[in-house]
Length: 116
Image (tube, rainbow, N blue to C red):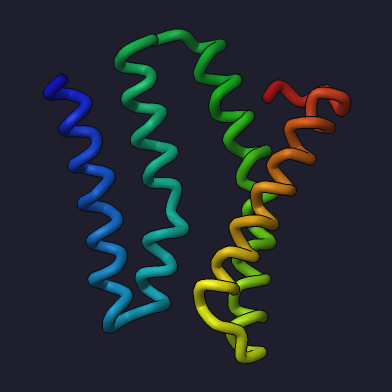
């Protein structure tokens, strides 16, 4: 139970740090947010609980393929905001696009030989 709480606190601290940095240095906050800190931390914790090389290889490979469908969101949101759209609408549209692209990846990835 304590380990789960510690993981949640660490993840929360990372999000708060990015938000605080973003108040003064939005580009630096974007850089920190784009670092695969959560993925690396997740892999470390997964390895600690289940040190299985094949499991980790599948996890890391699937993470790569699932990052790709999330990238268009980071183009759509600034486009919509600069076009005068409200933040919440832009964010919702970006998230919806990501969900659709995740579903496409989940449906077609295995057909292309990807282990997801």
